[in-house]
Image 1 (cartoon, chains in turn red, green):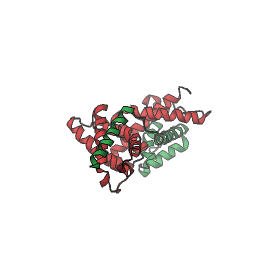
Image 2 (tube, helix red, strand yellow):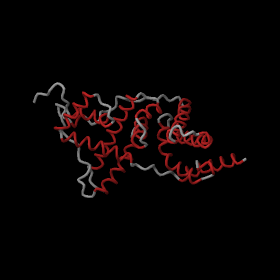
Image 3 (cartoon, one colour):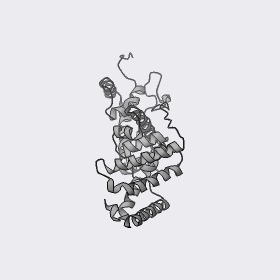
Image 4 (cartoon, one colour):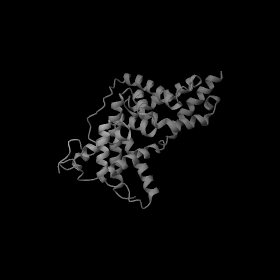
Length: 191
Length: 86
C-alpha cells in the first residue's frame, strides 16, 4: 500500500474518506464523541502498524472496520456501557397518518414536483445526511454501514454482533425515519 | 369493503417496505405486498421514496473533517514513519 511507502497524501485521503464512518460506528459502542474519536485514533495507529500484515483476504474497508469494532468494544466495556437497542421505538410512519382501517388518511407528500430536479436532488442529499446524523446510535451505525458504505446485511450483522433479523429491524426503523425527515424537509418547499 | 383475510392495509404495507427492498420477505408477504402495491398509489409513492432515500444515502459524501483532527492524524502518521525508519 502506498501509505507504507511514506505517502502522506494517501493516508490523508483514507482518513478523509473513512473518519466520519469510523466515528459513527464507534459511537455504537462508546458513549460520547470524544471517546469515539479516541477509539478512531487508536484504530488508525493499529492500521498503520498492521498494514504490512494486511492480506487482502477481505476488502480494506472490512479490515479497517473490524479493527475499529475490536477497539471500540474494548473501550466500550471499559465505559461499562451496555448496548441497549430499542426495538420497540415508534413505527415506520406515525399511526395518526392512517385511518381506522389502516389506509392512508395523510398520504406521503411527494419529495418534489421536479421543476428543478438537480436542485431538488441536492436538497434531498443534504436532508438525508442530516437525518442519518440525527438517528440514535445503533440505527445510525446500521444505516451508515448498509446504505452509505454498502456492506451486506450479513456483514453488518457480523461486525456489530447482531442477528440478521435485528439488523433488518434496525435498518427498517432507520430508513423509515430518514424518509420521513426528507418528506418533512421537502414539503417545506425549495430553499 | 370487506378485506380478504390475506390482504394488507397501508399501515402494514409500510412496515414491509425495507425488507421488501432487502429481498428478505417470505414469499407470502412478498405476494401480499405486491398485490397491495398494484392497487395503492400512495404506497407506491412511499416505496419509491424509500428507494430514493436509500439511493441518496449511497451518494452521501463523508462529512468534512475538522482541520485539527486531520492535523493530529498526520502527526501520528509522521511519528509512525519515524519509528519504522529506524
